[in-house]
Amino acid sequence: MLRIENIGKTYPSGAQALANLTLNVRPAEILAVVGGSGCGKSTLLRLIAGLDRPSTGRIDLDGETVTAPHPAIGIVFQEPRLLAWLSVAENIGFGIAHVPRAERAARIEAALQRIGLAGHGDRWPRELSGGQAQRVALARALVARPRVLLLDEPFSALDAFTRADLQDHLLSLWEDTRPTLVLVTHDIDEALLLADRIVVMQPHPGRIGALLDVTRERPRAPGAPDVETLKRQILNVLGPIRRQAAVPAAAE
Amino acid sequence: MSAAEGIVETPSAPPRRRWRVRRPGVQLQGWHRVLLGLALPVGAALAWEIAIRTGLSQGRLLPAPTTILATLNDLARNGDLALHIRATLARVAAGFALGIAAGTLLGVLAGASSLARALIDPTLQGLRAIPSIAWVPLFILWLGIFEASKISLIAVGVVFPVYLGTLGAILSVDRKIIEVGRSFRLTRPQLARRILLPAVLPHYIVALRSGLGLGWMFVVAAEFMGASEGLGYLLVDGQQLGKPAQIVGAIVVFAVLGKLTDALLVVASAPLLRWEDTAQRAAAAEG
Image (cartoon, rainbow over all chains, first blue to last red; front, side, top):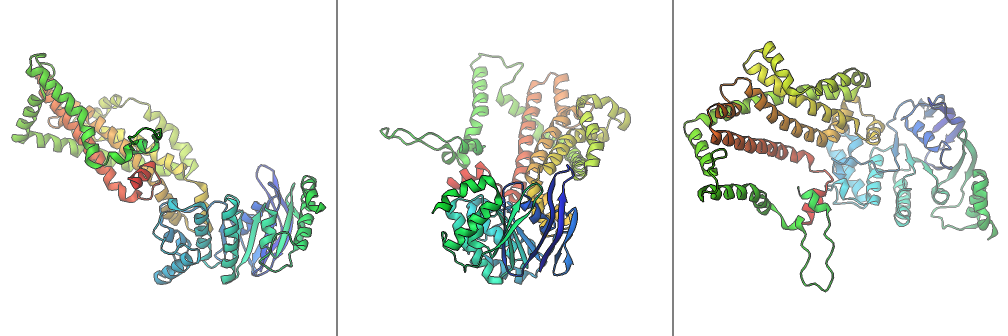
């Protein structure tokens, strides 16, 4: 289990990105973190990934304190960040260089199948579409078999159709090994579609405004009454500007 | 070269016209391109030859191309040309190697640590501003008139572009892909080998090419300071004895060798850069 205990992050400039944030992430759950820009949600993800150190507090994974990138924690960024000089297959295998050759090849092959790019392992990243590249990035993180997979607005740079496609795809990949997913997003609908629980963050300094359960079974159709209720709750927590935007939804 | 042509899209012709717009990126492949590149120098040589044969010019200061070729042929026959070429190539090779080694080392140092950069970069930038020929008297005083001073001068020419290219390449590596390496817990040597090295390679090869170009420039300056063999010696000798055909012949050999060694560098590095996302590739894929 991933425990985030009373962490704070203050940057050298004096800006306080996070303050006194405590959160227990359950095994195999999909936790979405939503909030406006500057609420510290990406900072939170970078701290869990071990890419930055918290100023105060601590992060534990199954009793082990996370102070640097951890083998059981994987991350997918907003951009695919593929390495241009490696083929698609080599990109997928980038993080498992320590795995014996035969097993590595088998895992890469299975991952290529799984993301619908079987037979495309020899292509260069520049030959992929945005959606394909992001699927390769997902595969690269997943072949390392992380217990926790962090996703930092992974679909925000994609068009609506590709995004919907990848959201489905993420769920089916998650079903394979059921890692804990922490999904940072500014898209409330995406959070409502995918997550078991939703953390709503508030800014100045970044903190948890609300923690909501989404009980409806997946796959979820948008517009179900309980989902709409949750959406209004989230918008209320997010603040006055958001509340105005929520009025039409409330009138339905 | 096809890069520019690949980028400049020819606007499609109005539908009424019967002819189709030709795409130069497709039309100019292989030998066509080579022939077109040769058209200008060969054409100019031909025109000059005709001008002299028809008596329009006497060709005393600039001899006819056939005279130049005959001079080169004579030099080649008695073995002198090979001797001079070998001497010059050896100097360029030694100076180039020395310059690459020093430039790369300094560039990596400055790129890896901001402390080292703050320490050495201002000095190197200052040294870079010194005109190359200004070193000649000092090098002769320190190293004598023979090979050591010549090779050092060439190395001085090569070291700065290689240093600047290496440093620039390292500094421009995207922080985001370094983070990918960190998230997979690469050690510093692994990060250098698996991410930094391939990422800087394209810029580094460009730096080597400009270093090589300067190496060829400096070898002439080096051979002006009292060489008894080498293409630069042929130039000095031709001037002193009033043999313009020999001077132009040596210049032509310089042009050919410079172009050849650069092409060699490009061909040798091509397999390492297959992945590069350039317009040139896109044009090649289309054609």
